[in-house]
Image (cartoon, rainbow, N blue to C red; front, side, top):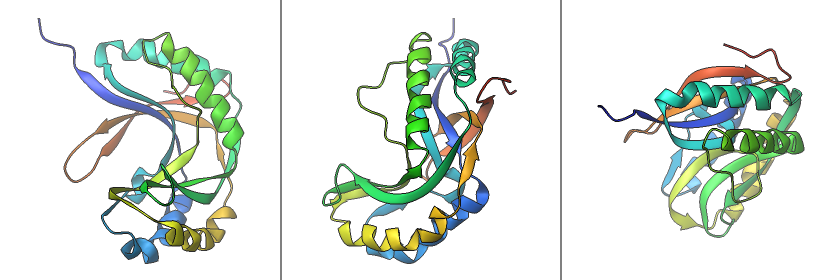
Length: 197
């Protein structure tokens, strides 16, 4: 009997192409100021709502049913991107991110519903509060990026004017490789019911 194939999965809200391009344009002139930065490709920018991790392919239907149930209980919401930050801190950054100036509470509510429903399908619940963001770079060494974030915030003014609606969630598979991850959309789920394909 062969072992169950396991997929690395997450649920995310997609970013419209124009907004992704605007975020990338804001970052581009500043990249050289961050040593050892591995920058997320524009097409990979997204708002993660639930990281699932390794999950058995044979149980995907069960997982999808729970995502459908969570999505049905959440209304579409508007997102505006603008604020910038770093994990674990600005002075010892390992991850650079762009956050929401609008829609963060709604995104947290969706993430909370996913957390509850997906536990029924065997996915571990989050141990910390949800913080909605786009990861834009991962750093090889901790770095004080305070000055970088001030400049990025100024560059993000155009992005902050580009509000967009999140009306669906996407279940993604992440395929890791030395050149960076590739994200493959597996299924789409409409917020407020009307389950997608």
